[in-house]
Length: 299
Image 1 (cartoon, rainbow, N blue to C red):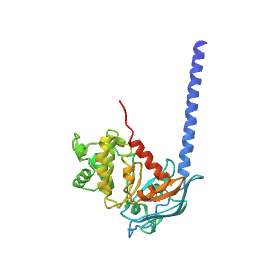
Image 2 (cartoon, rainbow, N blue to C red; image 1 turned 180 degrees about the vertical axis):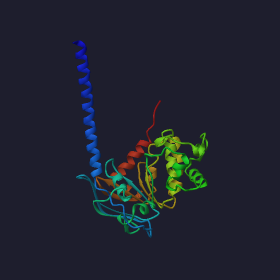
Image 3 (cartoon, rainbow, N blue to C red; image 1 turned 120 degrees about the horizontal axis):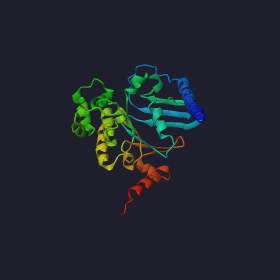
Image 4 (tube, one colour; image 1 turned 45 degrees about the horizontal axis):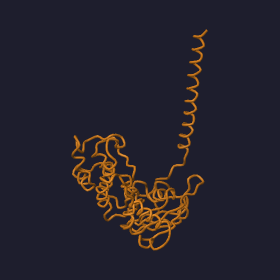
């Protein structure tokens, strides 16, 4: 009788575990189906070489479901200029950059590159104009050389090395046992954050696109790597159109224009000196950064 009870109890426990697992599977299948049912963005279009790399947005609106995130934004970014986008967390900075790069389509308004609506471009011809360097770098489980030449798969080795030298990562790559043939883990797991960032910058240099989207690559990097990264970014962005989400004061001060985004709107715009002459979010932003920079640890 006791043995039978144990057998029945074990069976009921197993059934309960499988019941919980089935609920998880059911929810996962429903979520996957929602993704599959989502309307696809039309990426067909014409193969266009723009006359210029001016970027313009006119009365752009965008919502996540029913929550409006970008509300009537208009801006103009002339080619070969640097535009810094700053503002409070959750204000819409990243979403705005994603719309300019056509990661998503706007709900209303237009985004143009060289005077042509980005929807007129096929995705390949549009992306040929853009390079991206983000804080969260993704590297593939492949050789370092192939990760660098990702944007130009047929690039010769001498071009890979030249890009790595400009991005200040040649020395640490050469010191590895297999050099450029070193296979890195998925996501670059066996490299430091600064090393991953510099490889990402080398990859962008290899592509040599005229427009650079930069989500401040030095924001989460230790001071030892910051100088090297700053040099690499300066080399990457020379003579380019640069659109950066800025977190640090020194990368903002020299921008040709600064856009302050809050609650989905551009609430201030101008140069550093112009915005410092008026009360607002930007002046507060600068004051907070300067105060933080003055902190010292007493031991």
